[in-house]
Each structure stands twice: as C-alpha cells, then as structure tokens.
Length: 246
Image 1 (cartoon, rainbow, N blue to C red):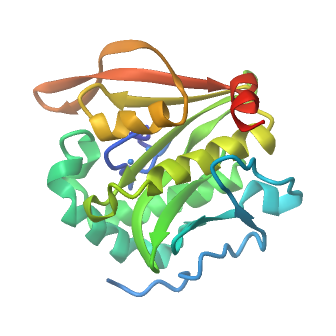
Image 2 (cartoon, rainbow, N blue to C red):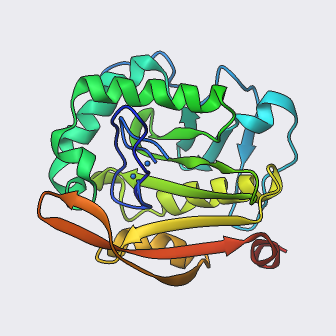
C-alpha cells in the first residue's frame, strides 16, 4: 500500500506500498481552499461504480480527473493549502502508519508540504497523479500512482487511509477507480500493488478487486532501523480487467 518516496521526503498510509508518502512519491482541521472535490485542472467528474469502467475523457480532463466514489467520498488533487490538514491526519494516525511505512514515524509539517509540491510536479511531468481521498469535506487518506512506465505500459498504485474511515469499502472504491482509469484512459497493460505481508487490511484491497498475487519479495522494504518487511506483489492485466468489467 505504500508509495515509493519521492526525492523530497513523503507519506503513504497503511497499504499499497508507498503513494502517498507526504514527502515521498511513487507512495498509503484546517480549512482547505480546495474542498469541493473539483480539480482546478479538470472540470470533468468521473463517476465510478463497481462494474462501470471510467468513461472516455479527453485532454486535461483525462489526465487529471476528479472521481466521485459515493456516500460523500471523492478523490481530488492536493493544493499547498492542504498541508496542515494532511500533516494532522498523519499525526493522528502516526503510530499505526509507522508499523508499515518508514516516513510516518518522523513526518513533519514541512515534509507534508514538500510532498504536496511533489504531487504537483508529478502532474507537470505527466507521470500519473496522486490524490487526496476526501470524506465529508475532510481528507481521510491518499491514493495514487507512483509513476507511469510508458515503455512497458505499466504502473503501480499506493494508498493509505485514516483509521476512522476503515471498514467502509472507501479505499477499495478509490483503487478501483484508479485501476479503471489506468486501463481505459491510459491504455496500460499492467497495474501492480505491493503490500506488507502482515498488513491484512492493505492486502485485502487488491484481493477484493481480483488482482493476482505473484509472489513475495523478501525483506524488500526497510520500515525502521531494525525491521525489514516482506512485500506481497499483486498485479492486474488489462485483459483480466476487461473480463471482470464486461
């Protein structure tokens, strides 16, 4: 569930090895100026249901959509004004996130801001996107692409979620939306998710969506000074996704 750290330190919470590391990238209440679940870079809002592939989009909207997930949940891009709220969310969940992600233990407000800036650079570089999961007008987690391997038409997804939002299927819906976007809009062939083998909640998301577990990477991620975690590797191919959504 984690997103790999970006060159400026970041954070992912709990699942899908590391988007979303504030301060890391492909990563897992202050008032935001950007709370309405609408992106300044895209006017398009894409409804995604369990069996509905993302509709065809064009131009900037296709690159940087906003997704409605239902029940007052949506995905939207981050703004610098979100940094205080994002930091407080990490701080409230710090102990549990630090079980799975190295960046969480010492995350600072400055790192949260650097992470947000890195997500804007990611968009400018046309290398995927990382989004805030918003529940009832508050940030409740992060989900995004670590980047896009265009030569091999592949990408990986990372995510994390606040403890008080767990158990509602919210992150499953969010990851489903990104997987659909990768296959229908970017025409990718493969999407990968990695999760700590001991992180049952994180692993449940790709398993619920029908991803295939390919194997275990031993001691693949350094969580802390004296702990390395084994990663379960999951993948979905475009052909498999088409079968599931037909």
